[in-house]
Image 1: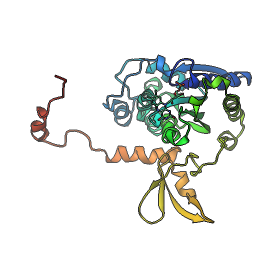
Image 2 (image 1 turned 45 degrees about the vertical axis):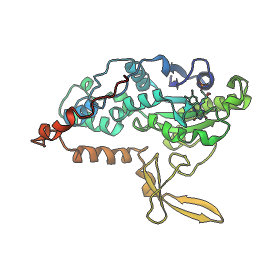
Image 3 (image 1 turned 90 degrees about the vertical axis):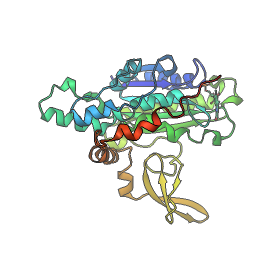
Image 4 (image 1 turned 90 degrees about the horizontal axis):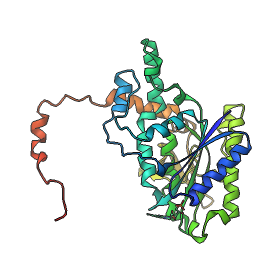
Length: 322
Ligand SMILES: Cc1cc2nc3c(=O)[nH]c(=O)nc-3n(C[C@H](O)[C@H](O)[C@H](O)COP(=O)(O)O)c2cc1C
C-alpha cells in the first residue's frame, strides 16, 4: 500500500494542523496508508554547517552523516518510507516558520538525490556494503503538495511562502503536483468552519491519491494546482530581475526567462532547455553537485591560515548584556 506522510508546522489543533489532517483523511478514504508528524513536537536542532553529510558522500563514497543526534532520525525515516508528502506551514513574517527552515537545512544537501545517487553508484562499483551507502529509498519517485497558511487578509503578507516551501521537497526531488495558499485565516475563528478551504484540503488529498494511482510519469507529475503560475516548472509567480535586458530568473528553479509585455500583460517565456535545467529536476541538481565536487577547494591549502586569522580571534568578543 502506498504511504502518504503529512507534516504540519505551527500550533497543535490550529489551522495548519487540521488542514493537513483533512487532506490525510481523504487519502485514507482513497485506500492509502497515512502517517502524520507535527513538526513542532519533534526536537530538531539547527544545522551547524559542518558539511560532513556532503563531504562523506563526495569523498568517502559512503553515506555521509550528521553528527547531531535528535528527532531528525524520526522525520528522516518517515520521509524515506513515504510515496507522497503533504507539507503545510503557517506564515511567520511573510515566510514559513523558523522550525520549517531548520528542517529544510537538515534535509538540505544531505538528501540531495544527485549527491546520493552518484555516491551510491560509485560505492557499489567499488564493492562497498550497500548498507553503508545512501539509502536506496531516497531515489524513489515521490509526489508532494505544499500548503501555506497566513492570518493576514492580503496575500502579499504571505509573499515568500510557496517559493520558500519548495526548500523542503527540492533536494529530495519530490515532484510537487499541488499547491494552495490560505490567507485571511484570522478572519475565521478556525479553519474548521471555512467550508471552502476544508473542501480544498480534501481536494489536496484526492490530488495526491490521483497522482499515486497514475500509470505514466507524465500523468503522475501533472500539475493539479489552481493556477498555472508564471514559471511552468514550479508554478510560482516570483521573479528576479537580471538587469541584462529582458532577462528574469525564477528564484525557485534557478532558470532564466525572457519577459515581454503583450496586450498590456506581462508574459515570461522559459525556453525548453532552461526548464530542463531547473533545480527541481535531476539535471539541475547534478549541475550544482558537479560544480561543488569539482570547484570547491579542499582544506589545507593556506599555509599561513592561523597567522592570517589571528587578529580576528579575540577581536570584538561576543556581546553580553551588562
Ligand atoms: C510570529 C508570527 C508572525 C506572523 N506573521 C504573519 C505574516 O507575516 N503574514 C500572515 O499572513 N500571517 C502572519 N502571522 C499569522 C499566522 O500566520 C496565522 O495566525 C496562522 O493561522 C497560524 O497558523 P496556525 O493557526 O496553524 O498556528 C504571524 C503569526 C505569528 C505568530
